[in-house]
Length: 274
Image 1 (cartoon, rainbow, N blue to C red):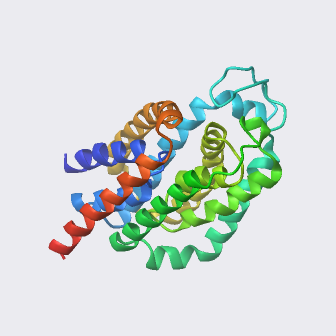
Image 2: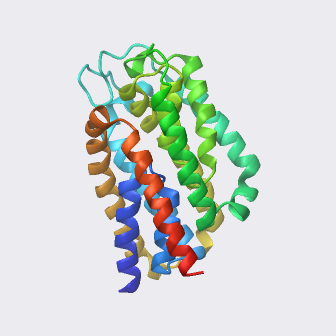
C-alpha cells in the first residue's frame, strides 16, 4: 500500500511538472526525499512515469507527429498549429535534439554522480527561473509566430539552449521556451515546438536509462508501476492543455517566481532536516 501511495503522489508530480517550466526532475527529487522514496527502484519508477507523460503529449500532438512522419496531412486549427503546415519537418527536430543528446551522453556519468541531489536541484531551480525572466524580458523581435515558421537556425539555437536543462532543476521546457523567445520565436510557437521536441528527447533519455536499470524490476512491481504510469499520463494530459491556454495570458514570469519560492521553502526544509 505504501508503494501505491508513492506511485500516485509521484505520478501526479510528474504529470503536473514534466511539461511546465518548473522542472519535473527537480520536483521528483525533492518530493522523493519528502516521501523517503529514493534508491534504484525509485529511479526506475521515475523513468516509467516519464514515459506516461510522454504518451500524453504524443496523444495531444498525434496529427502533427503523423504529419512529420508523412502518415497524415495536418489541417489548420489543430492543437499546436496556427496555420496550415508547410515548413516544419524532421530536420527541425533533429537539429533541436542533437546538441543535448550528444552532450548528455558525454556528461551522463558526471551528471548522475554529482548533480542529482536536493542542493544542486535548488541551484537549478533558481538559475532556470532567472533564465526564464531573461527570456521574457529580452525577447527578440518575433520572426516565427507559428510553429511552421520556425527556421532551421532557430531550431538549432533552441536545441543549444536545451543543453542548459542537463542540470537537474533547470527545466527542459523552461530552457527551450525561453530560448525560443531569445531566438525570435513567439510564445505559442516556442511552447508547441518545446513540447514536440520533448517526445524524441524523453524517449531517448528514458529508453537509455531503462535499459541500464531494467534488472531492478520484478513482477511484484508491475501493479504500482502501472498506477504511476496511468496517473502521470492523465495528469500530464490535463496539464499540457491547461498550460497552453495559461501561457498566452501569464507568460513565463509567474512560473519563474514559483521556482524561487519553491527553492526557498525547500532550502529551509533541508537546513532544518540536515
